[in-house]
Image 1 (tube, rainbow, N blue to C red):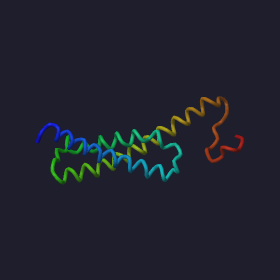
Image 2: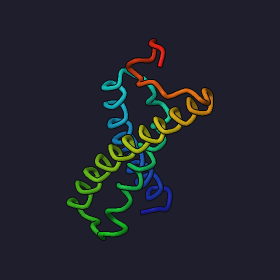
Image 3: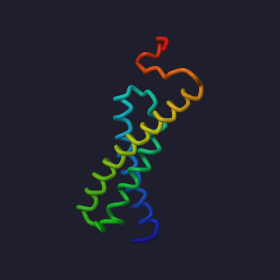
Image 4: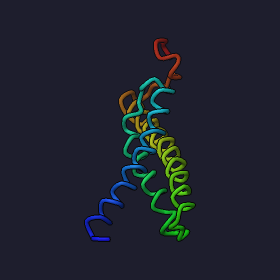
Length: 116
């Protein structure tokens, strides 16, 4: 197998793992109705790549079972990356609100139209 063929083969794997990360992110986007999920997209795709690469590198599985295991771990890591990205986004928004309104107690997000 030539170098270009191997490179294309590895790129196809990264494309598959990235699509699995995008799938988990898109499920979260539908669940949250698109509110505040865009910053979590890079976390989802990068962690799906990490999960997909972890199977052949760490476990050494380079056969058909390794392919199926890397697909499963890419989906799992993509979901975990999405959850982590959503958590970091919420924390960033909360810190921004606290800095913008010093001296006021933070209202619950469902009570945002009421005075605190």
